[in-house]
Image 1 (cartoon, rainbow, N blue to C red):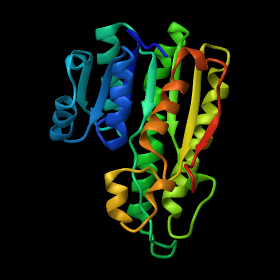
Image 2 (image 1 turned 135 degrees about the vertical axis):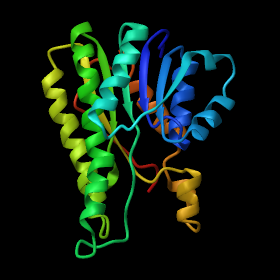
Image 3 (image 1 turned 30 degrees about the vertical axis):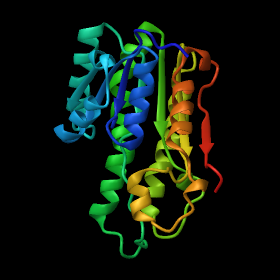
Length: 237
């Protein structure tokens, strides 16, 4: 896969998975902009890079605000003249709370962080992708969207929304060389998840490297015939 001079926006590119995906795009020649929450996380990402650091830009952006996302995309297109790839990694999890005990604030937080952020970022990049007749969008849902478990209704509904939104979007862009696909990972083997579930069999979890490879493929020119796909990646669980 060759992303030389492709302009890539990654929301949440500084976490455990985001760092790996950011590295992968840079390795393949992309010009990457990532959003971050907290300057230290972006500084830590930069510290892991060599000369490819010159092709990375970080922006502190509230991805849940339309004006912030519009401004970010305007900056990117003003600098590079286009935007080719959008990878949505921003999201959050809330579990262990049944419907009766779920607060309105928690419900709204899940929908805002997981679904609204995806909608706003897609809305911001689409006019440019449609005008240039090229674009790749990869959104992140969850296994929980199609195989929900008790105690995570707000999370499951928000991720199911991402799934349905992506499939709807795919129908809107199908007459252009623009694709919208969504990945549905199971438990990802990250330090945070290991800390949360210390006694699990991590060998059954999804390796971040395998998920990164899938995301890059869906974002590539070679995947142009794939649109509206919901791709499960569950590891061995």
